[in-house]
Length: 367
Image (cartoon, rainbow, N blue to C red):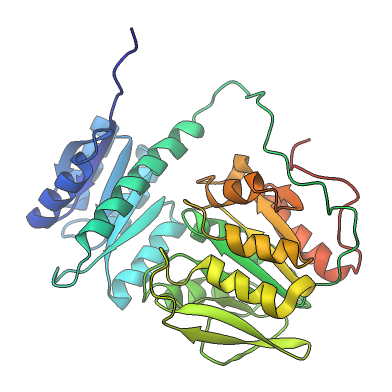
């Protein structure tokens, strides 16, 4: 007889009684999740985190007595577990949320404090998906016997050809991306020979503070994208949230195009919309990189870059917070190489430095 599914145990920390009730109802609408308890400020949340040891915590950013940032730092020290920050759409809270990600938060959700325009269905779906992903990620990082299952193989059909030096590096990522980007972008050399354009799934108002945080860490200039600006070698552009981004080729360079269409993609900006434009405009001169994230956004765009003759690179499952977007590309057979996160900056630099960037053999990132 099989044992019943044990729900993921979640601690909800928020100073708003309305939000605590709303989050509980959303979470418990899925039988795989349960609310272990609630707390009305960071201090109570810290005490219950240490005592109850939840699987996942949702944490408001701004609270009395102890803020979400202060509680997060203490939880990471005393009772580490995945923490999902719940932030309002304000400049101050966006900056605090970006700081929370650097302090160890797993991910974040945005909320509209007025609730006049809040898409409750989308918030509920995002909350449930992120709670499940956070719990799975935490379990995966618990020491376990080494797995011997074979990795997903990358497609060998085009790895022996010579690749031209890319004129643009396209990166797509979602859940786990902020931490991954903060880790790898400072490792890129300051003299990059091409622009780097990144689509990171974030709500409007968050990509600006995120770009500024990255700019303070990196040898290269990092900025939020602006309409019609030229793409300069060595500059890293974070696609502005709330608009679709495309790139246009101008001679050996390019520029940014931003619009509100298409409006019906699951994420705006969309990795697919962006990378499809890169493949169309730059063809074999585009390099596509897909990092950690839920879902399959980027599979179409990475496939287009692959078929156009560009070089495609995916993050290895072992270092992904969520092995969703890279898995979709690996299983579609559109990756030339798969590497752990730490090896990706060196590979980008190597490809940009060599006219014969293709590896001599198929690499899966496994020794």
